[in-house]
Length: 306
Image (tube, rainbow, N blue to C red; front, side):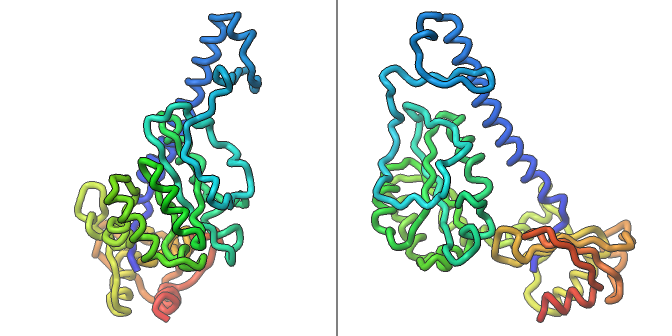
């Protein structure tokens, strides 16, 4: 288990929110510029075809020019909607990118990271950020049975954004090692892969947070535990200092991640001044579905160990 305080998560969430807001502002600014340009040229505005929504006119390019996207028609489209909320792709993108996801048929919605559209919750915002920066971003689902066709299609992109949670490729009937080797092969051909398999191996586990504990962006009371004895002692010491986030070393989507506070709020002023007793009460919430539970320190340690 790796234990971190909630404060370490806040900057990351703020940066994601800032990136999303920035993409929305860029898109709105582009729409307003188009409206202004059409307003300055009445003849062109009268001839333009398009739709008007919420006071803004969106016109089609002359001759109905289509974006120069990568042909992925040979791959199965898994999402259940027409990518609702996705911005129009640029006609002549600076770079062509793909955002790759995985749908697990045996899990509700294809995985706990998905909405009922079949996309991850963050897929559309990430893609819109790329589009607002002048790049195309096509949404792809990796289907293990179509591995070879998938790899061939990926060769047409400049960069691939991999958004497949650990364990999901195997759960969908594929092989993580086979997928990773394919990504490494694309890298050798000059394609960017974010994150690369090697980065995921070295930094994908939660204990990466321990490596930055003593940096300005880290917290000194961040630890990874590899034995029951280490966990019991470390958890009692850190829990007495401030609220905790307890994570499994691998995994995602909030599964097995607990946000924990002392019900008494009896936190010590300095880290290490005291340790919790087994009978102190914890107020807990699992990040997967936000359900709340109340347990003693001893009960939670027993739960984690056994």
